[in-house]
Image (tube, rainbow over all chains, first blue to last red; front, top):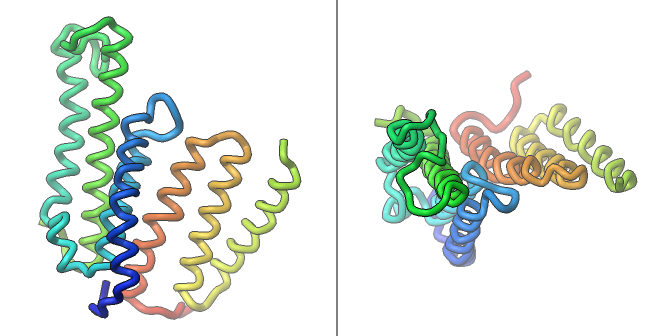
Length: 145
Length: 81
């Protein structure tokens, strides 16, 4: 993180473990309405996988995986997905976030399930982007642009 | 339900909280605080609130510890007061 001493073991372990954390995070996000978990937990685990690579490989090398400038746009995109789902449901005739009015195929329970999935994806992307941006800003020492 | 497990977890919870409060070395305090988070996550899970425990384990034991350590490396290692 601070001094770039390349340790082979730490780098190898982080590079090996990080994709598995990401896969589990995606499982937590996409399975969140059947089991414990959801967008916030999954997004935090995604951010933890990204931060693990940042800690192990150094901040400059980790920019190849997830550049510093992506954090805030990804967080904004997640919020936009959340808001857009609610707004599309409102345009469909219901209230804000009334998933039964989403213009999707299937019966109302299936539309509600898909709507909750969209919300979870939005929350996960927002939390992942913002937590990574917080880490980058702490390390950088100046505001994000 | 498992009152022996909960008593043990509460005991170690108080010990880690006191260590985090009284330690001069801030890195020790941060590690102790991570252990505190993880123990409280186990306590939530033992009480049946799996979702709350999951959130506590991921946020408290995972990300916030890293953020605290980064802040310590940017500032100072020892407590002043």
